[in-house]
Length: 352
Image 1 (tube, helix red, strand yellow):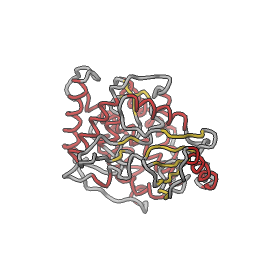
Image 2 (cartoon, one colour):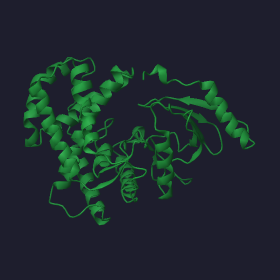
Image 3 (cartoon, one colour):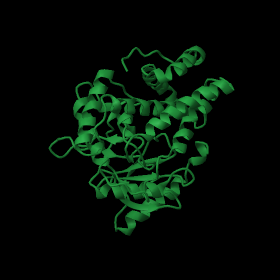
Image 4 (cartoon, one colour):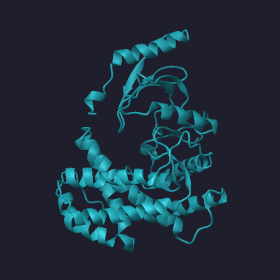
């Protein structure tokens, strides 16, 4: 599906939410269209009391039934997922609680990060203690991990960089993919949001201005999967970065909290960090492919600007582990010259 083919009949969507308010004996409030996300969903903020969002989620591309089921399930365990107020599954129309307009990302600074990430990690710890329901959350199986990793050669290497891989080069990549899949399989399995980062966490405060647990959005692809997946999404965010030493302190603190909560067993020194690093390597390899696809297939060119940070994460982690030395050597010899020539490339002198 192309970007343009996902556009709805906005008149039908507006009439639907007008009818929803009329059924409650209310007039439909004024509304404002919001900028879209990486998917095909479209959002409209309604000036209602309490605040609400109207959403168009194209049935051909968006799993609205999963979104609704997961939202209702998470709310049962006091997580700040939006209340579902009305839904038409066939049309892809929803009215949902508006958790707020403030995303985490613009509020993250060296001065605020400790407090904001403490709240986010406490929410993640709470999420990982929610009982797993396999009827709602599918397993994040090895085949799914592999299909995601294949986005790297398909979209980033061959299409964006226009580099044709040989059979031996495919073999090198697939050998690394297998190592990452094996490492993911060793981790305890819990509910995984799959996009637990600064653009999907809503900053919330109470009437007195005290920070509240973040609101959760964009969780329709949640699965049962490796315990470090959401943590690495949060702390090695594709849209903001922090010094490696700070990230590792946060990881160590989370490991202690997870162990105290009974989520993970006692581990050998460094094992949890290795899980975290390798899970991040899998995620960032996948994201290189996703951001390339968003640009080439969906016309969302802004994601190219985020590629340098994702590349920096990928190479900085791979360089720290001997298992990936052949991959790094090949990448630096064959791909980096093409990458440096790209108009979106910029060198990042950061400690990751």
